[in-house]
Image (cartoon, rainbow, N blue to C red; front, side, top):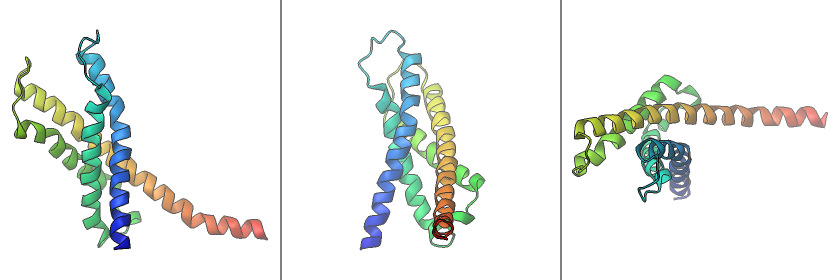
Amino acid sequence: MKQLFKRLRATVFMGAAWALAWAPIGVLAGLMIDPDGSMDEMWFLVGAYPGFIAGVLFSVALWGARGYLRLEALSVKRMGAWGAVVGLAVGVSPFMLGSANASVPLWLLAGGFAAATTLLGAASAAGSLRLAQHAIAQERLAPVTEMRELS
């Protein structure tokens, strides 16, 4: 049960980290879509919500991979591909669940959003793996550094 709570906490943390990383993209989209500020949108949430969902889905996908692979053994390319798939799924799902009533054609709106979330998913997954591998390497070096300081 303790392991389950640890995984759930890690999943929420991954979602929050991706939401934080994707929020500025939502702000940039708001600057392009609504440069004069006439719309009442919180543009950082436009990036943060899909980022959180993608981070959670990616973390759940990692649960399966961690069963047979060590985190150090995973490649950045493979994790980037997994992140791209998750980003594509998150980018396409809003358009499959509802209808858009925008002045822009639906295929253009869906294509642009899906492309952005796919690229962000790949970059976030690769970055998450690099950060995790760096943390593991630092953790392994810490006892060696401590022993050198003692002598």
